Image (spheres, rainbow over the protein chains, first blue to last red):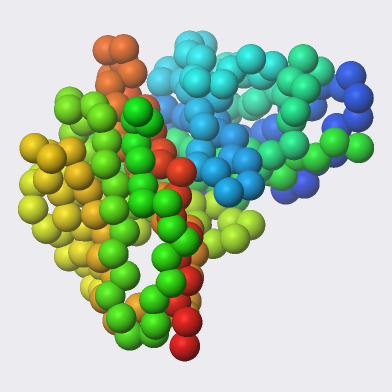
Amino acid sequence: DGGITQSPKYLFRKEGQNVTLSCEQNLNHDAMYWYRQDPGQGLRLIYYSQIVNDFQKGDIAEGYSVSREKKESFPLTVTSAQKNPTAFYLCASRGYTNQPQHFGDGTRLSIL
Amino acid sequence: QKEVEQNSGPLSVPEGAIASLNCTYSDRGSQSFFWYRQYSGKSPELIMSIYSNGDKEDGRFTAQLNKASQYVSLLIRDSQPSDSATYLCAVNTNAGGTSYGKLTFGQGTILTVHP
């Protein structure tokens, strides 16, 4: 089945640790996105990428980093500089301009 | 002013009633508009897309767009308890000339349909 796979589903971060969230899609979509959602709030854009080896900061990029080495993959690293990382992280992709985004199932990150 | 703003809710309607969800946006150049439904603890799922002024119907759902007023709404007819969720309005905005643009989301409206 075509879709977006995020892993792991739950992740715990220790103080001073970097953690990486995986996002893989087999929809052949060019554009991929990472969002953060806090309880009771909408989605805030962290980073997005429209083509391999290129990506742009979203509204809340500080403390996060990404790479786009393959069309199918867009991993997000939550660095130790992100002091409040506890949130629900969503990866999305879209195939064409003005088309909707489709989401993975999300990763829930918590602090140990 | 927020780029995309939804009526704050929560909204509570009885089963069988019409639920009306509203959204306003600030970017006059926006061309595409989406409604997503998000159940608690789950990821958003697309329920409606609308690109032209007027109404678009899909089953019990009707999306309405008025670009002159910068307003988009979602009507849910014959509301069911299974419609209880958070509804997110999303507007495609031009991301500094990039070809795909980006979606800007409202904060969501919580809908509860009670039996």
